Amino acid sequence: MPAPAERSSPDDVRPPLVRSADGRRTLEFSPGDIQSEMLLAHPTALVLDYTRAMMCFALFAPRPRHIVMVGLGGGSLAKFCHRHFPGSRITVLEIRADVIALRDAFLLPADDARLRVLHCDAADYLAQAPGDADVLLVDGFDSRGLPPALSSSDFYATCRRALRPGGVLVANIFTYDPDYASVLQRLDAIFEGRLGWFNRIAGNNRILFAVRPALPGAAPERAERLLARLGRGDVAGGRGGYGSGWSNRLLARLVVAWLARTN
Image (cartoon, rainbow, N blue to C red; front, side, top):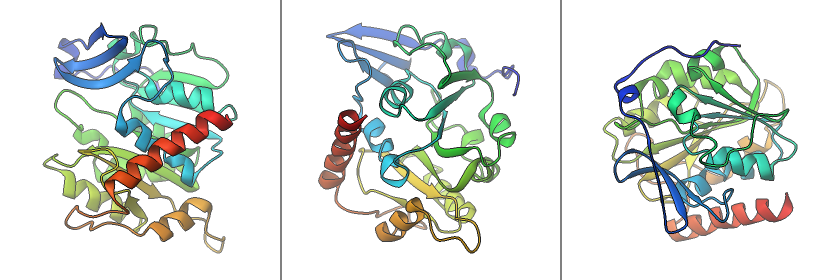
């Protein structure tokens, strides 16, 4: 298991901001730049569109054994998965100790047999855990956006190796990121064209789904079959995707409601 990260960055001197008002609590890396939001009356509810969109991984892997998350933030995804995937182990990888220190403020459960929050570098951890994850959620940002270390070809190759055959990577990026088109092309190359997304499901957040191929000679697994039915967008141009924005946003809400009702 990797040791806690000792790497520093400009963000280490700018502590995250926690604000509470009108029954909500937010985490911000700079004033007004909301990274995570929680309803104080319903701490496990998913408030932001992009978090609901990322939960569409359940369409690809409805019963994951191990969910690995890159980036803790306010813990919205970790709390929801801990509550609504009782048969899953959840490992959260977070490089910033000051973010982990806020877990009580955002009512994240204590570590237990199913949940672990690790202070570590995600790439180092994933490199030591090949074939260990059914679902890998990459949602790591700093005050400048998506760090290059979490969007390189080497990192995505490490992510692919960390997935079991048929496992799914879910990556959150911004469509206005200068590196956006290149990120799509890297993921498309690493996952051999098994890349797709739901069109306009979360505003400027593009939620990408990439599937590790099944073993040679094996029948395609659920995730690969679903991705084949969805098709994919224009990777070279960074446009397109499956369906319309309103129907996809409705789909994400229905998926979250279904998970909340059945688990």
